[in-house]
Structure formats: C-alpha cells, structure tokens
Image 1 (cartoon, rainbow, N blue to C red):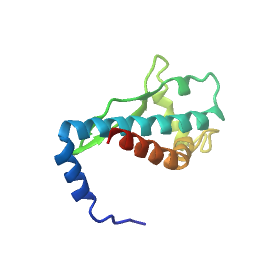
Image 2: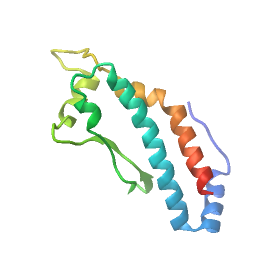
Image 3: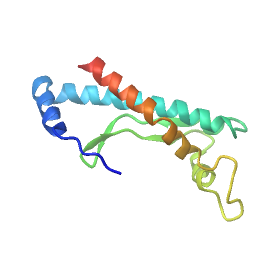
Length: 130
C-alpha cells in the first residue's frame, strides 16, 4: 500500500525558505528525538514481558540525529557493559535450536504499536517548532 501526497516537497521548500535550513534541521531533530522516545517507551513495554535481569531494557540507546543517504535519521540500538546487542537479533528472530524464544517479534510489535504515538510525537514537535 502506498500513499501519494501532492505538494509536500513544495511545502517543505517553502518552510525552509522562510525559516532557513538550520532552523528546519533543528525542528527536524527535535521531532526525530520525540518520535524515538515514543518508540523506546513501547519497546520497553514489549521487553517487560520476557525480561530476566532487565539488561536488554537498560541498554536501549538513542543516537543523535545524523544524515544518512541524504535524510535525517536517528538510530535506536543496544549499547552497554553487558553487550546485549549480541543477542537481540537471536531473541527477535529465534535460532535453529530455539525457533520461538519468549521475546520473538518484540521489536516488530513495538514498531507496529508505536506508529500512532510516533506520528503524534513528531507532529507535536514540529508544531512547537513552527
């Protein structure tokens, strides 16, 4: 399913001309951070169902906004002393010996469940910035 929005590029160009590139990037960065925080809240809820020590929850990290492929991006990843990033993939997809671990699909569920909250957070951040 795809959606085509007419005039979005023109509107963004107009806003950038009015506010300036630096101001638009600041607004975009705030919106990305707000959206990432909304996603991380849902991700932590999903990880609660199978937590043991809570290390996977505690090591969730949000990067600073960066340019990747010509667009502003923010990353959510695992970083910490326990090195949970090694097992997150195994937990999300399973293994040959354990094809259905308790937390299977938690990240995908969090992404699906946080779509509305993410959009609302981004919309609110942009509204405040303008």
